[in-house]
Image (cartoon, rainbow, N blue to C red; front, side):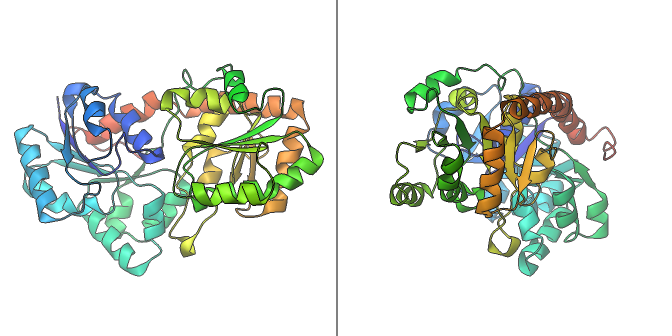
Length: 383
């Protein structure tokens, strides 16, 4: 059986959507087919013991394509008998591809996400991305937006080797009926209409826009509550905005939540909203937004921002709405519409659940990755 060395900065227990994407793909591969070389994070030792495959940690939080990292990756490739390499992100670790091919790798694959789409629009970063992908057999993309942005920076040969590989959702974990009432009770929202946002607290995600929109929402739906689930660098700034707006008790920051409790936190909402926006002249952009799909699997209508590939995770007018990132009034209008119309919420939630179940399963994505990594098989055609 071919064995793959996974080289990545994005691996649990480090939190985030990319980390979840990679882990969910890997746990569905045969354990003997995977070896992970990852940067370290708080709690990594305990986490790694629970994995079915070996995990080797670089002793710092960020790996860069420097000689120390390159040498260790080449050593692991040979020691572990790996014939393939998977980079958790093409930039910047994809620059190791040439050295690893010289060390014996027969198939080199890199995942891409939102940050590569941002890099593609910055001259120096775009050149780095081009160099990284020239050494790969396959560069994956999430959806049409990320494909077009990233392909514009690549050589024609590398662009022709792009293949779609999107994340999935475990519909057995994220489903209607998780114990949302217990979460509502915990935060004082029992019996109230609730909008929930599950995401890292950072400017691109748009939690500040939700807070700014909340007085408008409450003017139409006076008892509505807003539940902001997650931790991140914007927490202090958001807490100050909540206090300044007199919204304490109506808007709650939960802090980081264990993964096992996420389904119940989604289920605590009547509507899911993450009005993400593109920042830093296109460098900070949403790649897809797995949270929209998890919310849809839970049976919630979703309101997404229009950053990057986020609209790919919404069927406009069917599973929810896409709003201009940062537009407070349009966001408030969509939230009021959904909070005021129970039948619309049910219809969109049911459509979203059906769509995710049919088109966004993890098993198909993991099977496709396995085929991409097998050097004895031709690269599957794009779709």
